[in-house]
Length: 263
Image 1: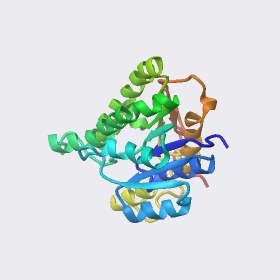
Image 2 (image 1 turned 90 degrees about the vertical axis):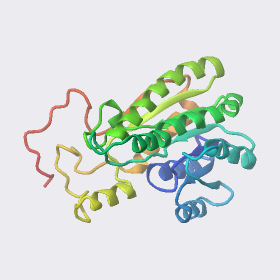
Image 3 (image 1 turned 60 degrees about the horizontal axis):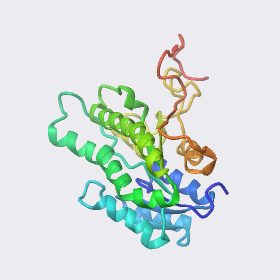
Image 4 (image 1 turned 180 degrees about the vertical axis):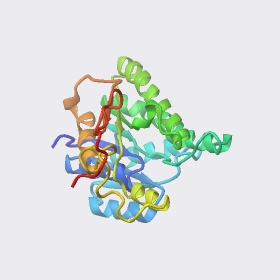
């Protein structure tokens, strides 16, 4: 078991990538703090993991004091903290015309400021355990799609934070900070989001090769498998790094001439 006896807090873990990471953490021997906004979903995940392995915290991370309360939940229940996974995020469409100040500030509050405050609150405990922070970003951090403006800005800020703190916190406290930038992932919310945009119930089947060379998009459990490496001791002294998890290179990509689906 690669995370035996470790305590990991995973934000946004009532569904999608966060849920997959929490499940895999327990499979690898860890205790987890599950977090999200959907209490019914959270209770279902906690029940699946077992009350001996997980505790649930429901709260909006943008609320004053929420990051501190989440970290305290881990300490109260398990007495220590070995890892923090900053996964919770608002994935929401916006562009230059419809992004006003209030909207941008809300996205930044959840996607960028909350992870910073969580790291800040967790730092004394992570320093004690020589623990690790894993930020879940996005390939959109590099520039992003035109209709994901606020989201892309927030993930760009998160990536810079990872590189900055990955250096300074490791040098001063022995706390590693790394990041995964997933590409297109087939989460429950992504399936629903695309349906709300007018696509069919099976839009994710038979995708054009230009978007998914494998004929499908990435599964949450595949992101979780990579997350375990960064949370486990086997990642050694590596800090301040960003790993892209996508089917194709973000720079210098050669799209196929035939963009049809796999037959």
